[in-house]
Length: 325
Image (tube, rainbow, N blue to C red; front, side):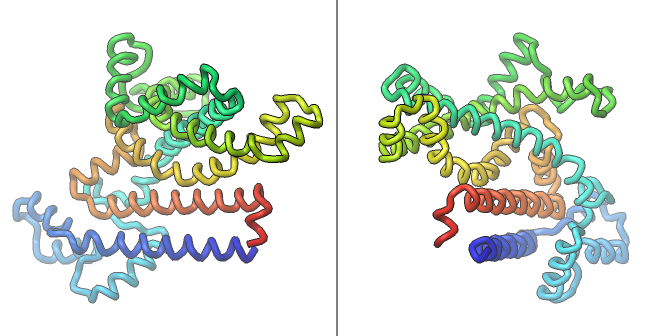
């Protein structure tokens, strides 16, 4: 419990730092959203309207420390402000309508890449020097060196435009009524294949190489030799003894990979016009929608910190050695 509370304190400090930076950065940037809205209105806004908008977006004449305290209170109560590009929709509603698609895309790609990559790493290390160990890691690392958007555009052109196997854009067909019926879920899965496959191809090589190297070191341990001397089956030794202990670094990397998956999903969502927060973030940057940008950055930071904290709890449960530090 002492270790869990200590880690929780570190994550709370990191979250407070991210909230503080999220508050300061837009205020140190040149210009402000109210000035942009005034320019778009071409001088038709009245002074009292400008003052109300400045107060609404927290940009009035209050001292900076007072604005900071009010911002912390708003974050604590879930009030992330009003979106400028989608005025007067609250930022929380905009993010809430988009984040589910990002989680679907990012978590699907992350889980598939982690499972398949770790399994390939286990098999490659256990049959070290074989065809799987010699040919597949360099090939996957070569594919993983390409940018997300490059593979996304290539997959979109080949499988979407040329062959017509998969849809070109969005998360489901236009005009289809959302629901939990088989038709809608199947349509969503069809639209998910190409974006998720792009992220999997880029990231699977790192998972395989990391698991392979850990498995090679684990296979040289004395308890593996003891298990072989007892006459246990190679499959049982490989999965129950070697892979189980070599999996611990991959569990830690899972939480860290969430942030990279979100970054990769941003570019992938733009290429496929996938309605996630990455696509919405690009739109907010183009519109200089500071409240929405702040809300998205804060949501991503909170999600990554929460995922890493959960992974820390799982790591403590899986590895008894951590609990005695």
